[in-house]
Length: 281
Image 1 (cartoon, rainbow, N blue to C red):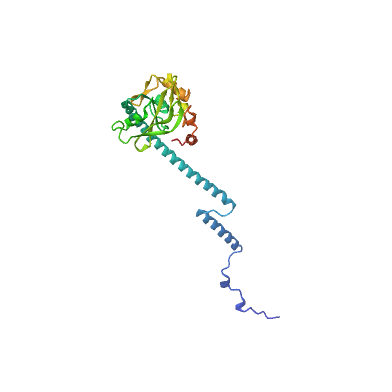
Image 2: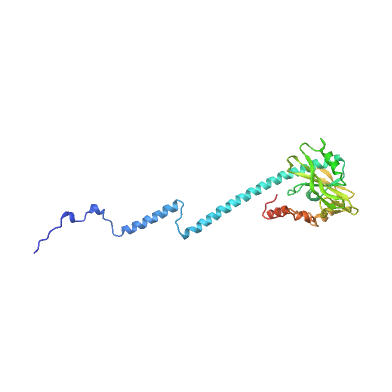
């Protein structure tokens, strides 16, 4: 028999060097658990694992954030315009209350017309989407009227008066030029157009689309103006049908009715486009 020799101690496997002995397969489970733990920590921290699946949530989140920003901007604009319209209505009422008596004191023949006449006929108030007061002076001496309105005490303090229009020749001796009365700050005004007797019609020195049959205007009548009376065409409804059609009682945003020249101007086309998405001045 051959002697059996035990190996020297240095050649035996060292438990301390190899580390503790673990059950078979633990290493694989440990690595999987580590990866799962990292994934859980990543999700808990608000991140998303990289890869194609992560692209869709990121795009959706960006869309939601963008839509939220647009909504905030739109809402802010809507509220701003609503506040502006409220202020504008107060100023338009003031223009009527101040300019109409001033013209009466000046001793001229005039009447309320266009959008101002229409809003008073509808509801005895100004139209919130209007931007001025419209008055027509019969056969005006504009230079003399301008000087009269500029005299102290005729208009309230802070009101100013000036020429407006492009001085275009409208034919028949008419010129496209009229007077504008500004409220303080010039953020609102009243336009004083000229109305001229041409036999069977009254010509307005704005453009030919504004002319109106004389029989609808003269002799003048009156209309309720807020808490007072104002001069108006003899046949108010007839004038409004002539200018705006048989459905004149139905408000139409940024519409000038039969005045095709004004109605088709760029600024009104822009206003109508904004109005279609709910943004009205």
